[in-house]
Image (cartoon, rainbow, N blue to C red; front, side):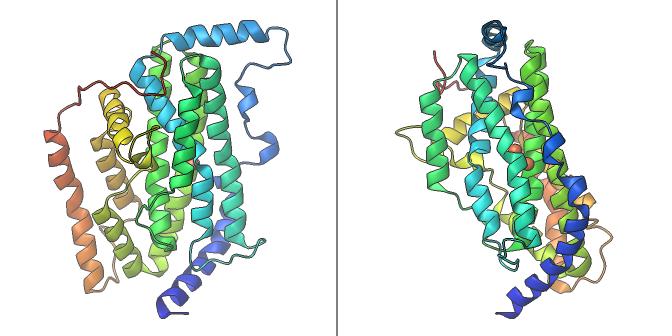
Length: 326
Ligand SMILES: [Fe+2]
Ligand SMILES: [Fe+2]
């Protein structure tokens, strides 16, 4: 094993202990955790048809852009097999089935699995969606896979997941409040509980990176810098509709999200600022020259990106997604 990999293994082993202790605060016990059926019409109930009718009536009033964003969010949640296999490939952690990190990965996957289940069932019942087209996009996303620039490095992986869980928290939270405004309280509640899962997950990954900074500040800093230089690319980037290339659908999806203020360029900057604060970059000591340089780059980045974001115009072009019935 290379020196690099050996050091990573040591650090991950060290953090594994902390993670196992803290796991009950980051992930909830299955028996009492919410389940999709807590929110959806009960098909064994006598009021099932009425409940569905009510759900569909509310869903009729959701704006086109909101439905589009919700579908994109659902597809990226449904691509969970990709994330699980990606986390299982992280270097420096034991592949032992009973090992701590594999336990984490499985338990996290179990929680995440409910997100796609819940949203998918809601969309199916809503009557707004061409389910076949949505399912095709889901299959594409899983089958295509995606390269998000982390390699199999645990530091880069957890920096990525810290960022991504924060981003999904924001976007589900905003969909929840827009759904409420449009009068769909059920959808609002659903996205609210998903958002709070994402907040817990974000806390976990942020804490893991904090611990890594404590023991390996230079390498952690270089990993953070590297991910920031590459830019955090959301899985939604790789969305595509039937007959389209990777990237084409994302442009329209992100336009809709930006128009509604669900996830914007400013949110990206704010997440970065939050991470800089959380990981206490400013007061960090014991950095070598490369570490100092990496920190300087990261610290200067938010202001640069704010200037770019301010120059961005709100996208106006409308687009017809194959996912949504006319
Ligand atoms: Fe999720
Ligand atoms: Fe999550």
